[in-house]
Length: 416
Image 1 (cartoon, helix red, strand yellow):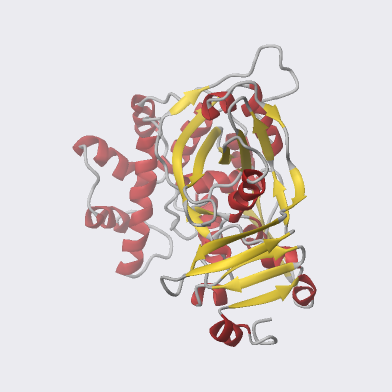
Image 2 (tube, rainbow, N blue to C red):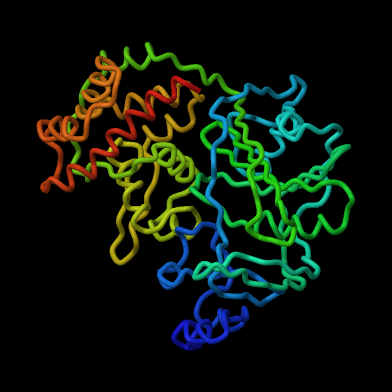
């Protein structure tokens, strides 16, 4: 498409390029080309040229130098205990299969009332709707300038909205972990309802993963400036027992039986929460690496790293068919763990990690010394542990960061 329409030349001359859904459809389904929820999923030509894409009408999109994404921040690591009312039988907090069910559990349990600090919450506007017309500024990524955009009847989708006595809260819900999000998912619904009602409108990002409800409350300091959002509150909740003692982990490290190193690349996937989230995703259906990158916040390289990390632990495997992409699926071990309760699940993940000699030795040294071993000390342990297909010192050094990250994750689960 960029070659066909000389998009880069057009942007250089005019500052932006307007493309229709019909033009996109000759190359690929517009939904897949234009719905890019995370910066990491941007096509390489977008990344190389600091470009982003936003809808500006029903069937038209603008491509320009725009800062469209916002990193997630964490203000509070504590987890607040919640519970469903005793009379609720149709919701099962231990089996959350969709964003809608996660939101219903959060409403029924009082999580939303607690977080939103409002009373008599009523579900109101949700689903698809037209944006109406509004204009706004958005930060240019190639200069200090602010681009001016006008949106006219673009399609907007709201996952849920709850109106209380004092405010309207508009919720964007996800069940996958990511490093950032597309501001548009909060900003367009905010602009629609900010102009229609007199109450304050609160944009809320809602993420459910691994038994934890993460809620983020934002505020647009300047309603006409896309990049003016500020995180003003963050809180996490769970229905499950999240109390894990360090002594329980130490007992695992003492008694665990070391397994032979598999003929699978040693992990390079530092965020273990995302290993868990990948297992949650694969619990419902098998996926190829390409499908993982299309639907979730992974690029192809990360999808490869994280699927291999889960395979290394025996949680995931892949099946190959001639001429078709490999499909990744949860093993019986992975399914058993991912469908356990929070405490059993996390102790099982700790066991799966500590069964490997490198991680066990680094964990024990961490416990003995009270500080993280140095990279060189970890590399020395790795050299003595018969790891599969690690050759260069640079590779050992890169992989050592995952050892540090996973051992830190093990320690952190005792601090929630």
